[in-house]
Image (cartoon, rainbow, N blue to C red; front, side, top):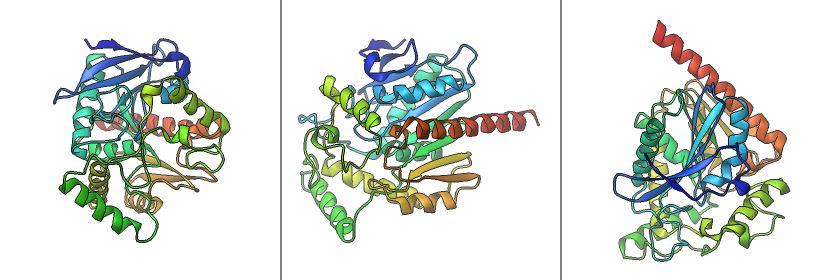
Length: 322
């Protein structure tokens, strides 16, 4: 059984009985899982894949909403962020050696979900970078009945010629031993601690902003700065590779804020237009973190995703009985 890990329940504001566990990926790196319990007679478990810089406490309120709808939630500190093992001497750098290494974390998370006896069927919810990891996991056969995404990183938003510059700089940095350097215009420290609420690219809701800011302020170890050149190159390459793949045969619902300024909205629209049985919902006025917008928006998103999970589970059960 996995060992207990630190967990900041007061900051998470999740369901009673939530806890964190240490697990190890196949290559030995230590990761942290957050388990938010649902009701005794649960409808399944949401495997929640967070974005870059994130950590398990961030999704306490989301897990509370899923618990009210009958689901457990299991989420993770990916390698290099949260309280998981960091990858570089400068622990503030968001780094990964290979984007494929995140699939080692997925495999460890899935194994832990089964070891813990969490109720099935499993469902996927991927946000931002977790959306890229999640899409790759679906392609690899992640055993989930339904999939939800919020602002998935199926492309990174750049303006004009910056995209070509990002490719060139990240490639050369990784090739010539500078892959651990911060990507241009980034550095140490959480975006939340370096940015004012007014004009931020994450949320229009002050409560959601303060919720995230309090977490990284009271537990500075949760903070992560900008990405490394290596991470940037790996992420760009993975987004391009994913764009060339057909959609998985899994029911899917994706949410995108109309004011998205972090990931590439055009890539998301293109992918969802080609996803059989998939649907794209636009959040008018929403920013990157639609689950950290006001409570009404959050409840709307989670209600619709929960409905998709239920329908997907019913359809899967009917197919099994046929």
